[in-house]
Length: 395
Image 1 (cartoon, rainbow, N blue to C red):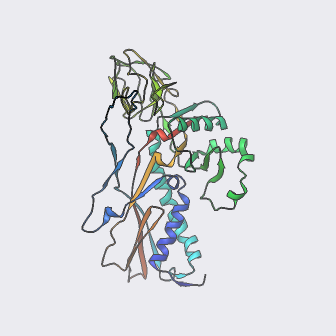
Image 2: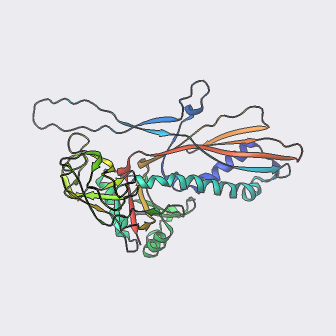
Image 3: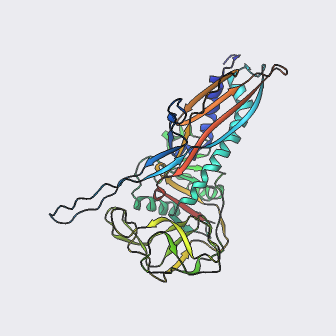
């Protein structure tokens, strides 16, 4: 490409393309772009309601038993703004786009992508399905166990399943499976950074940004007991203990089993729950997700929690893990919205690619013959169907 005067539209499109390539987690999620957030004269604020699937019970026999449709929803707030600020000279803007992209945009978009992606990874703490492979290297069996968790939760069996591996799990798994990532048709495609290939029904990616998970001081055998019969809901009363639980800790209650989402028949496996609020040594209750529901269309456990049910935690006391994550794209959503294009500036441009909206604003500094410029993304994220994801804890 010959030299030309680079325009804001050209620069914004190229910056967005680079950002898109570097976000392999965000790029694998349900991306909800909504231009109505910033629509002049009809703004909806910063919160978008997402409708969750309806659930029903099945009648046995000929007698009609009509049931109401109770729709549920969750809220997605799009209010986090991140950006990177640069300065161009007039000389910078008179060059080939490829050179400009490699020298200026590539490092700028790399750091912006890393910060946005690291932020979105906080959603892993909402995931309660967990494969406990602590103390051993990840294996293909661990991945298949995660696949089973997704299948048991009725995750769609399509091409929208991914596994994001931390760097150590990537070393261990790829070494064992290097012969299985050879799909001649897929090799021809241009993958995002970190893509390894597809096998076992998943697209595999490596990512350095997956955050560590530090568990509370409670050991695997926590010593905690439920306090009260037939407990349900998202807050469970417990006997006062001496150790702590951290947000993201995964626990089970003795005698409380998961059920098939449609038939409501017990699977024989203990239902896993994630702790949603830190609990100190004098805490008398635990906040958990999912809420315990033992009857009706949204039943997710075999029975309510009985009095003195032992509470067990996945992993050890004050343990530090870096999980890998298997998920269907509809487990999480990442949304961006159009930022307003300001008036009275040198130039402004806004572009959207695959649901990600980016704005560039440029002004001219006549004293120094420079163009201060800012790139901004306004976004939000939300775990909308955590049952469609599974953490894999290894090493």
